[in-house]
Image (tube, rainbow, N blue to C red; front, side, top):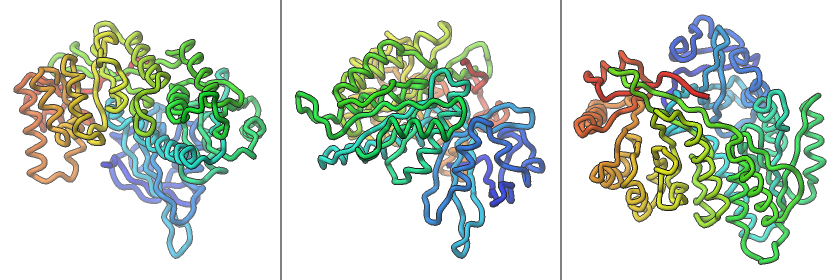
Length: 463
């Protein structure tokens, strides 16, 4: 990751060292950031969570990556991806080093939800290994109440408490702003644990648990992989909580289906807008729903109807919320994209941006190209380089309309890499393919490209 800045946070919470640019990144000059209390620059609702990441450490632990809201000197919020890891010297904790990258409104296109998806994938691996081995246990989804005055802040606090107590890799994953999933053995009563979590979170907190008994077979005796995958997909919808109770896999899927059907658009997805540099009135949008960036077919396959209904419900909700006059792109994992019958994007009035194509085999890549050949598509320049056969097919079909490029890809690039990057952009411009240039302002875009008649830059955010 190319960081905007790197900071060393001392055991007392102060910023000891600083490398990089903070003024442009989030509006705090380096001289005001250095030696200040780092936690004071974190949004209040996330301070407990971030404090645990910084100081609840042990030697040899892996670096973690989280998306966090930082505050500038006027209180304006900016989202950053932080990569956090403790540094020990002679066996003694010395400081915590963070690398911070500003989450451009469009950066979500290629990277949003990556840390989220990694945590969820690890949980799925643990869960399905248990099922394959016939091990008993429970999957519990703990959620804060919908009427909480700060659901996202309470959700972060809930996640911090669970990760503090359940430290095994792949045992805990945050599903959305309100809900965290936990795999535990059957001796733990999820209702009692929810009550204990409510108490520990303080006055006004109300935690509920929705649990699946992994050792309880349904009447048909079918393997529950896809069924549980569908429940996880439903629970991952932003703002969603499935309720309370202990269920078999089939009962949980039935309850989740009812909840998704009743409230498919509980939390609208914000839409970032970019305008064309030489004609700002010409705009395009990007709607990043983290649950759509996860590959729901990776372990359980693409046949589960509940999972497919979740993917379609989110696309439908985004389509209904978008401005009629603005084309909106939705980044979606390529595996999950295969769940959409016929890839009929016209019914949603959305443009697809397939992610993680390099993780698919050649046959499925070509299937993606076939599905999208009659649609308008955006592609990331990194995927364009890794999967040329897909984008050659899209270009031949005149389906490739936009290229997304992050200027920070050029950080540390040699002359040949830079020349190749600019060559791809120039070729796209000659073919009438527009460019969304992320991580740049107009001056940077002009220095890089010269001609700006096909270039869009991020300008504002809806929702």
